[in-house]
Image (cartoon, rainbow, N blue to C red; front, top):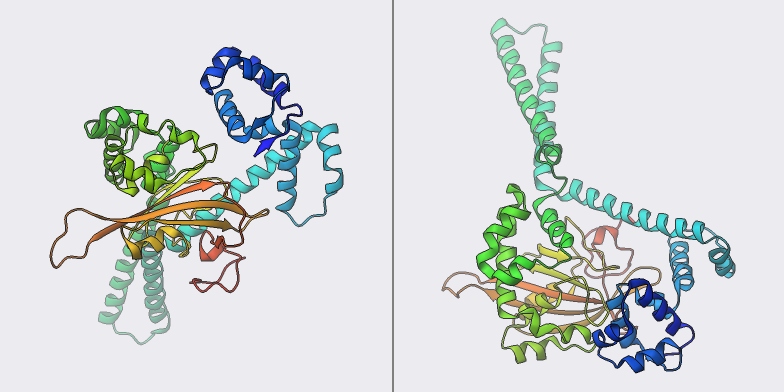
Length: 425
């Protein structure tokens, strides 16, 4: 959709000059003539959304800042912040507030973003407390030892007529249970403090995500070296505790990079109209490989941020690349309505769906999913099936979008047939 010129041309010119980029160089990078860019910068030509996204990408800035200006973007962020709390705000004067007190307005939006981040961390910790099997087992053993000590102590206190032999037995039990309590308590402390001892505050799965995020979801060594670079990458980027979990992830990444080199996707990444199934047929690879390759990097597709979810047949998330607005639980079961799980029942068949997440305003996404059998087929053994789901942010607004959530525990939707537990909301 074309945008009226307004002040967009002057914004592009100011941003280009601030970045120290020549007009001819920017025109070449976005594949237009320098004379046409000159007309745009002087507000003498209309400019479409696709070209705005391309220019913003080269200038390393948010397209909304070119389309709307910094003030409009700040107003939008303030409106989002006001929707997150049940407090009366003078929305009719929000423009006035942003213009008169831009510093305070930025502080409000920054604090709102910080609150969202902290709320996400609290949710992660709550999931860990509820679903972490090691933590649950350790707590069970500790409580069991405490109960045994209390029971034995009660017998000794109230057993005035116990003979010496039974008293020695109960003392021995009390001593042994005390040792057991000390061991399990220390094990619990070690587990909770393991992050500090090992120099990381993350589980292996979290560390894998953090490493990919630090490299903008693209591991250059694997792009260039393939499988030969996996061992060195493991040694350089991952802690000893995470290497075992990271190896299959890196092996898959390296194989995907060899099958679909980045050069074959450079033009596709600039397009908003993408058909992954058609692209897979053109490249002669399976759909899952294409979906994973399209999610590589932090630039997105056609200006739309991308996310990725890999899952096994048990519903466990093997790898996640978050995308803004699509909440993914770190621990515990995710929403059963995600297309990545639906794809498990139709292995080999492509699945596309428009999704909407509960938010204010609702967050919309386009999802592409497929499931594939891993490894050779064997008689009398169940196949190993893994599913891949590519997410594109900024999905179209449609009444047929599938309503999904993060997990049942934090999903506000009512009347959902897939709900497994009550929501704390």
